[in-house]
Length: 159
Image (cartoon, rainbow, N blue to C red; front, side, top):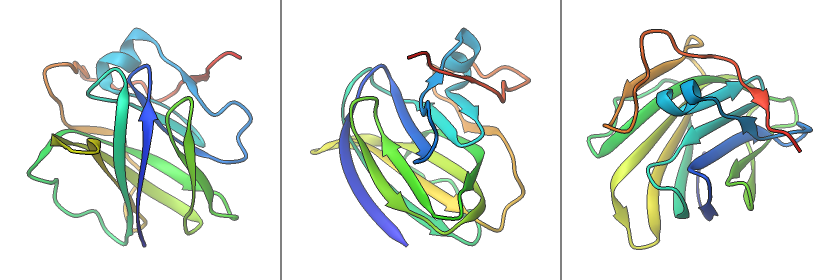
């Protein structure tokens, strides 16, 4: 399965969440900003390379994670559980796109790519089923400072 979608992001965050979650967006602390993601079960937000603007995301599902793309500038992996109905949304605060994924436990890799395309910032997201759950910042640019221990819980954003 592969899909390509485009939307605008704001506040430097790209979100992936289970459609049924009541408060889908996460409240960011300084540690979340430094590591480049805010995660809780059913919802993850990734810190984008730019504050706001058009993003094009390619989503794929694989049995195993492949190598990091050569053009990736920032790469983060987190566990992600797709619900039985497969209903997930990807996007920014103002606009999300629904996708249907196979149910089950995945590792979600988010790769921010350079250079930007004519349609906006480029992002590759891979949901890999045959992988052990893990949190990792595999490639950090100068804007990130993930530290030794990653913060693996966020609270829902208010409101």
